Amino acid sequence: MVIIVVYSIIIFIACTLGALVGIGGGIIIKPLLDFIGYHSVEVVGFISTCAMLAMSISSLTEHIITKTEVNKKTAGLVSLGGAIGGVIGNKIFYSALERFNSGTVKGVQAVIIIAFIIFVIIYVNQKNIKSLKITNSFAIIATGLVLSLISVFLGIGGGPINTAFLVLLFSFNVKESAVYSVAIIFCSRLTQLITIFIDNRFEPYKEYLPVIIACVIVAVAGGLIGSRLNKKLSNKFITTVFSVVLGLVGIINIYNAVVGFLV
Image (cartoon, rainbow, N blue to C red):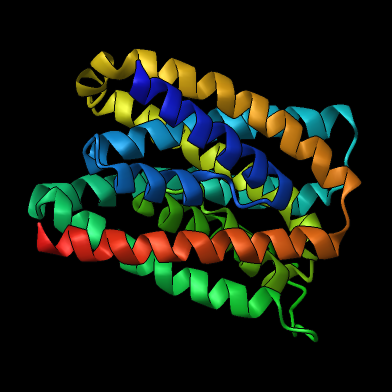
């Protein structure tokens, strides 16, 4: 019961922040649950995936209801790439678990996350960001695919990585990128869960259903609140929150990397 309360608090805060700045929440959830160390890297990844799917559904629903302006072509194509990447990333993750122990996988995930966090914080805080304006359909699909693959393997929502590269490749600001980022998260998480069911990997997670259900409920609430705040707050404020949160998560990941490789 205690662990359900702790997880619920973490996921609610993470999903609120995730929907607010487009970081997905998983970048916060995964490291914190690894830090607590109550469940294995595989179970933590599954809980994070369920929470991210729930958060993305509630967040996208809010954007649809309030008619958030988006480029439909770009949104559709990056989502398609995200769906494909979700399948591939899931395959790579389970292949890694079969070849290496969970501590090593967790350590590698933490190191990669740290590297991306450093890049993202530096990039989004540049005053004169040089960016592209990609319009080629295949390039847009490839962007969604690669971003999704990376995030699924790492067990995170992938939001900060998505946001930085969406800014870089499509000339969005951080606030605009949040909507497209959440779309990628939704498609990648949906296809990831479908793949888990098809591969008959769901059985080990059945005993964690009470935790998962609680986490899904608070993730939905956080997604709705964060999406509404996204519309009310300035891009400057959102960018500041984005950087502070990622900095704190980076510190936690350093600890997780050290512990993971020592196991």
